[in-house]
Image (cartoon, rainbow, N blue to C red; front, side, top):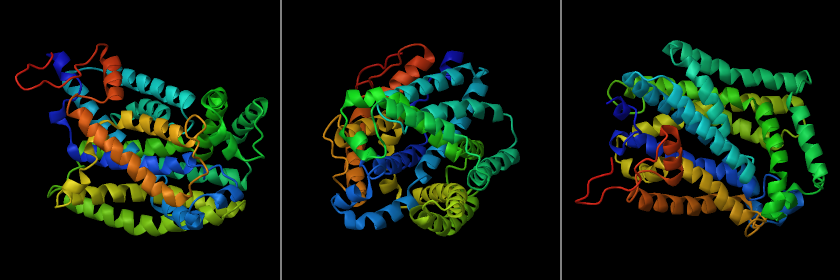
Length: 416
């Protein structure tokens, strides 16, 4: 009986609104990551100017930095915290300890390492797994304390940024220096166009440099103090999951409306100023500090505003439209990893090498095309199978046995 209580979540237990929101978050992450894959994140100014549609680069960059960057990975973090609350409730009902949860995180960490070393350095799974372990320490923390901790964790990076820009203390510098030495040892001169290295090298050449890219990723995460930001959103998600605030009910509607008004009403203008500073600050330490501080203030507000607005709209006539990517959300791990694979094959020397061909204005239509294919594939797959391929592997490794994969056909009895 206890084994049944701790079995993987069945489709009938899922909150479809969370699947749908996770699907839209997946689309946002794809768009943000494509800024790098398309070549813009590495290209020199002449290369950017030579790309198709380059005349719209400034407008596209402003909109992406304003409305997309950071907001959707924060939504993912929020949903991770909600999922933790659900898993924790199920473990407590079964009387089981945290061992299975920790095993689940360990396997996620392995997925993250494979993503980092085999595809690209922008992985978030490994960090999620590490911060998920830290989240376990807050399982008995009261609701008010969770919010205080979340606020403090988003303020810590502001102090961290002040140390960097006004005291000259930057712990990311030695890591960045080690990465630069690794690139130099590999014959890569980053004073030349980094885009040529990223988009032109074939897969084996890229693979040889992935350990060095991982150092670059660690330096970036350290500079941003990203672990604190991720854990902060985890804690808000845990609070939301405990209170069941991912559904608009008469009891929750007032709080959701206030969250949407504050999140969008304050977050949008602050994020706009931050986006402008991001594009214009240059090497000015005061302006870069202001940009990074405004990021820390606006990003969680906008993520919460998006989530609250989505939840309120879900109860109205927009549910069918909003629920369109729910199948992709149910296969989030599979789709997240396949996004990196698709972009690698499209934009780098491992495939079609289309990096630096398109300007930022093409990010939206290319994102829409890739994501539409992912949604269609996810619907097709889930009409036949219980889990996505990545999810099946993750669950099977977590539970120590192969999980039933194929859905029962009419007249058949599902596998036990």
